[in-house]
Image 1 (tube, rainbow, N blue to C red):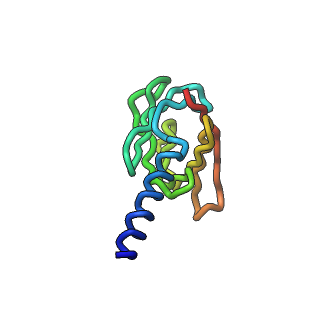
Image 2 (cartoon, helix red, strand yellow):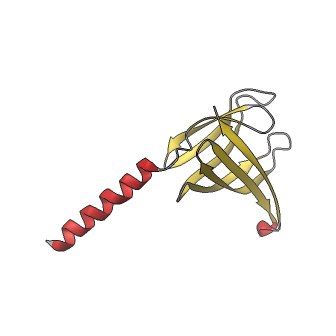
Length: 113
């Protein structure tokens, strides 16, 4: 009985923590000035909604805990895809993409609209 209650309590706390986390979903202003929409649940996709590359999907991320996400990000100008990380902090989203196992990385900060 105690084990079932402990498991139920742990599951409730995990779900509550997810609800209190800063949400990645929504519209974000990219560093280039375009609007990017992030949508999903558990797995998130990033689609540009404005600018030169509007309509293009440029990323796919999964939650990694503590407002952190991992996945891939594509440079819409070159169509090159990189391993990526994202961290949400309030109304800011820090995105980074790396090649060569993290040897060369670029990052930028987006802001929630």
